[in-house]
Image (cartoon, rainbow, N blue to C red; front, top):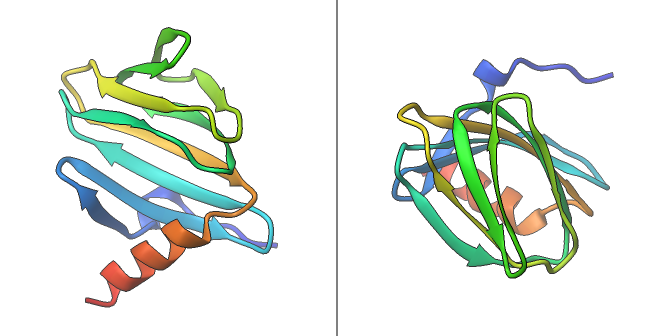
Length: 118
């Protein structure tokens, strides 16, 4: 069994206003905690992994090639493999997300690991 507290997850800045940490990285899944400053916009991107998450704090507008949805604390979201997606933080407070990727995100894990060792 593994257990941790979200406050104990060490986060690194991967883009202006965006901090991310690995809560769990296994042979199959990666779980991250993401903190994004108010007003930040992330341009659409894709990855092979399925991605689901829960908004823990704040308000966010997610957009894909097909639709937009505004989500807030307690809402759950899902993106299919290779589905383009981006976001805009719409709250005055920091956005906090917990995200799960399947299969695991080795690229993200290595990036965060290297930034933590700097």
